[in-house]
Length: 233
Image (cartoon, rainbow, N blue to C red; front, side, top):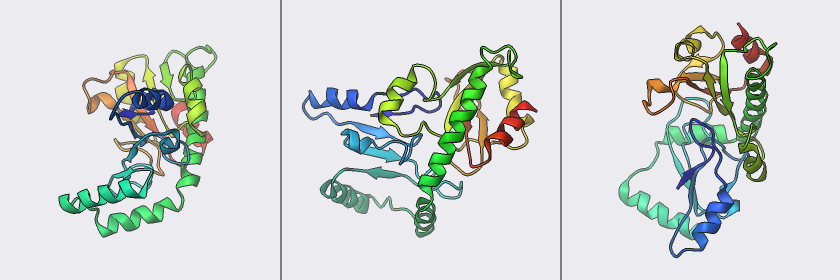
């Protein structure tokens, strides 16, 4: 089982390398959590994995108004077996959640591509603050992690058609990381991701294993210049 990109640090795993290693063994399966990179950005089934999991609550529903999850498999036979298990366990979604999800899937490609483009722009701009002394945020930004940056780009480029709408931002001090979400006007301080509104959260609040410097940012459908201006102010 692997999650790629990884929540919240955005590390990228080489899906094809995991598939090749699994195929060399008997009865080893590869399952990918693709919540951070929904279709059309990443299609693990086409890379040979056995199943893909999505929190449909996030990008697939995309409007912060539905709860759910999905498991996608490459064949009708496997899907039927999962359906029988679901029937026995009773873990079926409500009719309203299904209706909301069907509504949202009609715009998934447009939303995912726009969010990915803006996140790539914004993470790149913030990354410049780690080395450009003339940058307005120089000295405040410690690091930025997104599949479009650094070593992750090599693997991401061969298995993704967009680098995702989320990235990790580490500030220079814990105090700054805790204060930033409350100082913003356009970003909302909340713990979800993949919706039409841009969200930011201090992850240490929910997970003591996460660096106290780290903020998880989920980009919505706002303009890049507006989000940039919010961070500048």
